[in-house]
Image (tube, rainbow, N blue to C red; front, side, top):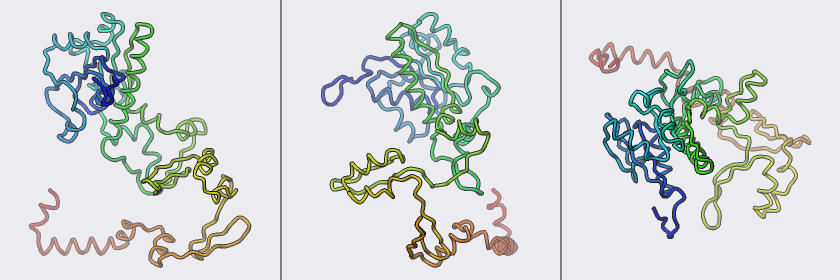
Length: 330
């Protein structure tokens, strides 16, 4: 495959076989297609990807139906095999990764599953929500005391596919260097756990739970309008001096913006912000918004204040229109 500017893409000539039919394998190999690999997808007996997912993940791939013998020939002709079936699914089809690599030592096989090929949880099934929960990500999402918030779409499976893509390429590079491929056993749980940054190791070391902070962040971030469009910024505190210097705004050189220990105290009932030296800065806030913030009410909390009236209304309505009961239950 040739890039638009006439340059050969980095994975041109690399042969990839996708087996399984799930989102993780499809996402991993979609990246490989984008970098120029020749990807053959063995079509599953029953398609599990939705129409939108197929439109997103399958372009650029050669989609084939293959007998077990043909599938084995495709696997041995490939440089990389990516699969996301249940543990042992390849062996059950006569494609045991160990046997394949014995026949072709340079072959790279990436197996993407919820909880790995072996271990007490290997046979467990998982949804996107379960995979992120078991990996610890839901310990950080949402705010206390409400339940954790699940991530949208299929981020757990896409995260697994993204890690599968990078791990497979690392192993493939190794096979080019020393002639030995590898069988990569990658789980969605470990991929999610790897996203916890400091919170996972700290919980293991200190044996304390990390608080769920909602949208509170510990970095300078946002989308800012510029002269020629918009720029996205995410800078940690240690990166703040370099970022502020790059902006060219002398006002940002103020030590207050560079000192991570500088603290302001917000007194919402009095509507003032207190500086460390005791000086206070007043601010305005809409009365209703202030009432909600002071009392910890969001839209759901405000509604639940009237839960008894809501239940009474529903009971009265069903008494008058009992034919609605089946619709509400069903």
